[in-house]
Image (tube, rainbow, N blue to C red):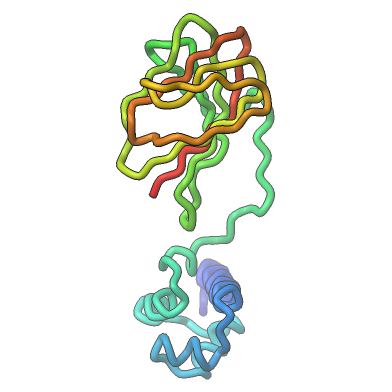
Amino acid sequence: MNTMEERTLGAQVAAAVKRERTRAGLSLSETARRAAIAKSTLSQLEAGEGNPSIETLWALSTALGVPFSHLVDPPQRVVQVVRAGEGARIAAGDASYTATLLSASPNNARRDLYLVQAEPNAPRRSAAHTRGTTEHVVLSTGRALVGPTDSPVELEVGDYMSYPGDADHIFDALEPGTTAVLITEHS
């Protein structure tokens, strides 16, 4: 490898391949066999000494059962903090309701995490999301009617519920300053 960029990419790939191989519980020999590459090639790659082709990386990503991007993207931070008042706030057009995206779904998951803030007298009515969506709500402050539009449930502080997000649903704050954590799970 010649340039600093190539050396950095080589180090990222080396760490990623070893990390994913370890997570999969595979030996060097088994990983090389599954990827149809020489064990020595894999060993050099994990030592940061190789210059892998796209084909080699695709073969490894397939053998390890991970997306190609997991082998070339730098690892994500392990710790993430979103302070109160930070984050992208999205307001509803028809309700006194905002949702702050706290965590978008990573590649290996199918969920988004939001902080919901709502006020009484303007319920948030949501149309059905994509098929297989489930919503999970933990009420943090206040009280609210939450769930399917035809059968919402009154939640109090600390209550949890899940319901089909692929059907029409509602979040209706019953007290000022109502907040909740909302997880949208996609299948």
